Amino acid sequence: MKCPQCDFENEEGSIFCNKCNIPLIKQDYSEDNPYIKKNINEDEEEIKKILLKEFGYMGVVDTQISIYNKLKKEMPELSENEILNKLIFSRIQAVPIISSEEEEYTYYKPLLQNSLKDLELVIIYIVNYEFIESRKEEIKKIIPYDYVIKFQMESGRYIQEKVRENEEKYNYNK
Image (tube, rainbow, N blue to C red; front, side, top):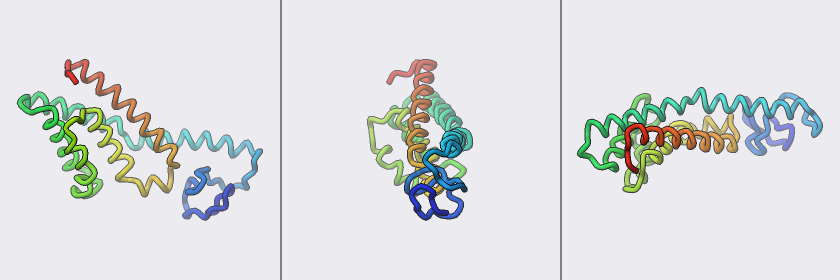
């Protein structure tokens, strides 16, 4: 499918141009066409729905916090770093499997080796891997990079808020 703005030849079925990121609309491009401008805003809302609702990162965040709390309660003798590493390993071994354990371990290895990590950073890594890194090729075809960044910022704010709420609820010290 040819982009009406930059003439880049995109894969058939692409929703956005892989070169200039405008929506691929089956209509001739025109600078003053209000329909295209309106559609860009509608597409932004549709992308937000895909990233936020269908990907369901909020459930993953809540689940990771619950697992973390359970580990802290059941294994009080472990250090914070050991608990966070157990949380990461539980994620690597979780079902459904989105990639091989080896690929996931490679992704999480720098985090596992970081002794200064905290719950917020671990959950950011998990959400980023599950919803961006492991689906990079799929996402590239349908969502412009700008929206991926917006998703990461929005999910980061949500993670920060939930971790703070959890710390206050259980009086965890950072």
